[in-house]
Length: 406
Image (cartoon, rainbow, N blue to C red; front, side, top):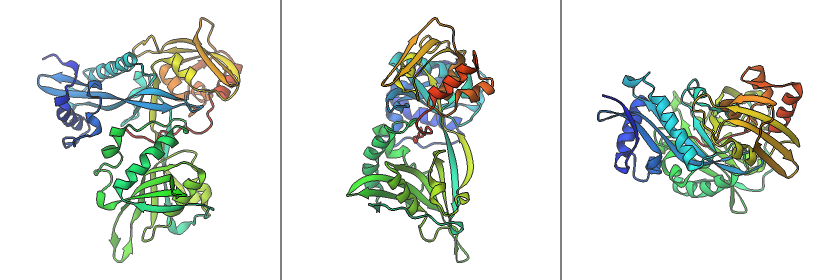
């Protein structure tokens, strides 16, 4: 029987979740009432073979903060799966095409995703826009250089923590390049799903100054007591700080929890200040660095006009879209940066740089300089001056960091 691709009905969400679980090698439970998967059902798509959902994918509507502090609308791709019995039939390609056209039709400026595997999405025009570090500290090997802070850390119950965290996160993410918004429907289950953080081991803390939240952390205590010795580890799941003071106060708390031997944080910015807070910075050990947010432009002209650039300058780039040849994505664009103003318009001028949509996605938030991708032969430049200009223009005020998983 021929496989067809279609959107799902409101009554088919549980079947969609069940099918996505097959693709991820898990038997997922039906979604709880009000789960995020129930939102924007008209943006969920499946491949159908007979009565079976054999491939899945969907978009969520989110926002992305770009250099300069503006936000753009993003189609956030999620739940990309193919049933093992239906691999190598082009179903993923059909799903991704549908999702990109959906983003284009709805006016999304970019498409974003977090990848379960790193070798899949470059073929669809996505580039690695942000990366994260996983770090660990053995508590007995170092001490925190205690900072001066005005506020206090307070432990709260989860139902209190979520109400404090939501508005604080929304404030912080608007000031952080690469940050991705968290819709209301995201919080109840996605923030702390029980399969990731056991409720009996979960703890929430908030840092407050004059009674106002300035930072929060969500963590679990894993491990047990063995032969009279603790092997418990502080596993930091989410960490958000509105100021360096809040960041320092929260790390100070987390590194001084009694009856623990270590702290681990899986989702840490590459430019974290944590090592510099320690008496021995070497003890903040990086256990891994990996890709996190993948990005591809949908409407390149709007995307490049939305961000600011690190200095005044003028450059012409040519963007190709080998996957879908999306008209809004491909073409030649002239970026003009002046103090207080940025323009991006289509042009017929010869390009200074030629790149794919994925390469543009990689450099667009400042996470990787264009010169790096030129050395990797993923883009081409007309001359050395163009490389120097591109590196200077695309640099961001901070290392981009997405915060949000989806």
